[in-house]
Image: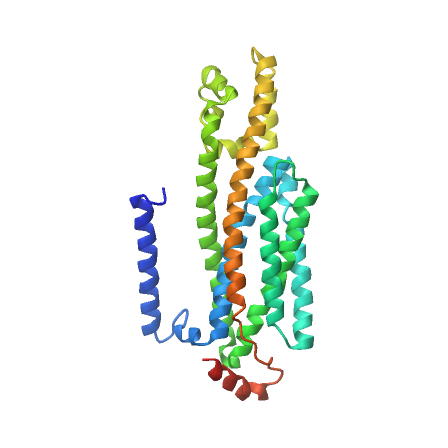
Length: 319
């Protein structure tokens, strides 16, 4: 439970570790993440936005292949390819965005547009159900991918443009660090949300007729004990078919097979509802990221080394 001593202690440990990290970075001659960078508002807004969007993105899309395989019924290979529309959207939008920024010298509108599409794309996943088809899932991923693709190059360009050339590597690495840490934190938090919701939604399945029958006839079967691991296992089409095949040779198969099919449908509903909760939290995170990106300031893009003084002057004005 979130209020348990273990979780509270781990959260406290994390906060304490963060404070120690900041304290050490402030004293270090060559810090991993220089705290002085945060005096520049472009850097601060970029890092916060990248961190939040990475939390929602990496934490939520982990469950798309599982949903595709377990609920829609795609094969193992198909579930591995499930994220292809998302990746194609990212690559396409990143390429176009880079060209537009280079041509027009404006980057804020790309960031705002990208975050808007991310919110829309993530929100669209809230409406998924057991009736969702592979095509509808792909369309949702395309919108999300285009939004992410619009933002990926923008924040690197923004921070690189806000600092002199000798700090470009430092600020670029810092943005990437924020993306990596955000993805790690998001995966942990949204994974916790998924497990908590799945445990809650599976409570009613413990009294399912098929589960009761398995507890009597095969108490060692994973299905006899309903939990998140056994449910995700039984949703695998290969495992599903193997169970059906074994049931056909079991006494009372005519009664067990219909009960098993009903059980699978109930499991799909419980799993889908849990995934939807993950996307609800992810959508809230993306809305926060959209609000933050509105504060992104825009300064003229540097085109030659002779513009360094102008960029440094604009940066000091922002500070």
